[in-house]
Length: 175
Image (tube, rainbow, N blue to C red; front, side, top):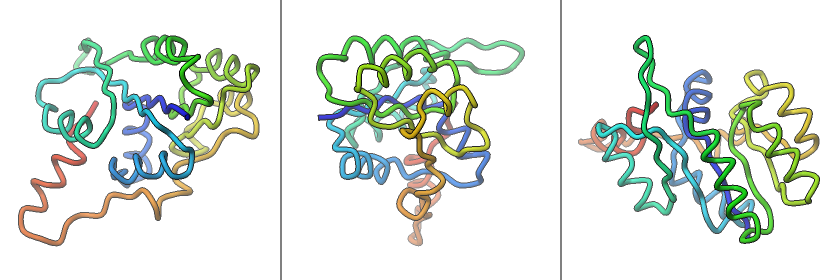
C-alpha cells in the first residue's frame, strides 16, 4: 500500500498558473487507481473561511493536516513543508512507497532519502516549467507532471443550477 503526501499550496498555485483547476475527487481516484494509494495526506494552512472545502476533502477521504497560518505583508503562508516531511517519516514503515506532490525544492532531502531507500514511487509536480530543478534532478525517472493528466483530473463546471455554489465548495478559495 502506498501513501500520498500533498503540498496543497504548491499544487493549487501551480494549477492556477496553468489556468485550470483539479477536481479533488478525480485526483483521489487517480492516485488510488494509478498508484495504489491507500492514504492521502493534504497539508495546508488553516483558514476558517475554507471550512466547506475542508469538509469536502475529509468526506472524500483525504487526511487533512493543518498548520496555523502567518500573515506577512498581506500574504498568507501555511509553511507546511516541515510537517509534510515529518509525517512522511513518521509513517515510513507503514507504506510501501510514497507519492510526493509538490514542485518545491525544499523537499530535496526527503525525496533523496526515499529514493535511496527504494520508498519513492513518484514525485508529481503541477508542471515541468515551474518545478524546482533540484527536485527534478533528485527524483530522476520518478517524476511526472500533473498537467499531462489534465484529461483525467480537470475540474469541469456543473451545467445545472447551483453550479457556482457547488464548484466553490469543491474547488474553494485556497491558500
